[in-house]
Image (cartoon, rainbow over all chains, first blue to last red; front, side):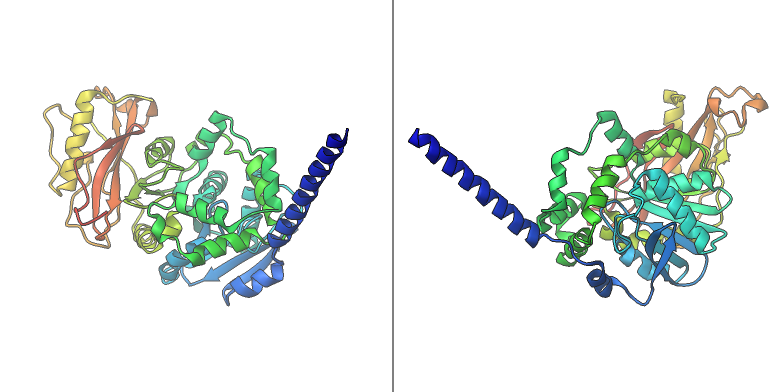
Length: 323
Length: 111
């Protein structure tokens, strides 16, 4: 029976070592206080606005017709930095951090559904008293922009979709994917390498991913409460009836897409264009060598095309007539 | 969704290449009115990037009431590519939701 005792000691030792290792890792990967991140990432253009119990962080830059920009999942308003650099010369650009992202942090309601996100977006633009504006979003932000536009046609002048996530979401729903319970460990242990992996896998040219960008993503993830919020959003994600939503869009729409986009292949642009059958004009521009995170990877080129398109008069779809 | 007929597809490809080549629209042999194609002009940086965006009616037999009836319509849009050298070219058509590549490519110096 002595060997049983030794086996017990061994298993106990392994368990103890595992617990110590977990605690050490959890301490290493501990949350970063919100105040620390706000001190680092706010600029003179940064504002905070309380909307339905959520302290939304946004930036308000430039002057001209208002343009609201919404970032992707896992990202923050910083995604638009390169694009805003020129967009602010012609537009008043308003970009905000969605709940569970950037400096906005978790939603006290714990609701990260698409419906709640669209509702908060609406309350945000209401609070800013934006009567008419153009709205754009990338990935999840594109989905939010589509939903808002479909339900508020009287407010939105034009819609800009940069590799929107709805079709990707639809594919995910078709495949029945779910976030495994084991992913909860990310609440305690989240290595920087994960942010690096996500970025490099979402860039057409991974060499364009900078350490600064990886640090931005990672540090925002490590904001207190953020990781639980990210997981909650992933688990509650549903793109809803995107066919119905897109059919309700009746504003000129610009579709921008990176051609090297494994997360949302460029062919989806064609599918999306077909779904936007009620839009009075759809323009599609693709970017060779650019991946899913196109705002980060090709910001200046995208900004140029957005500016040109916004400056152009509305081009309504032409119809064939009998000869 | 209505599938474009092969003849229609050929026609649309022809139209897109005509637009890409910045030629004037013309009447085709099958009687489709290519005046619905965009009026090609000399491209300038400020020109709106909406070179081709139209709705074509399938099996159009002259009955005006079909105009506006989406069950007879095929939407056609150009897919433009912003090349690394800054040029903007038409590289594909979306015809009824199907991506149809054209034989237009960015300059070889572009990635």
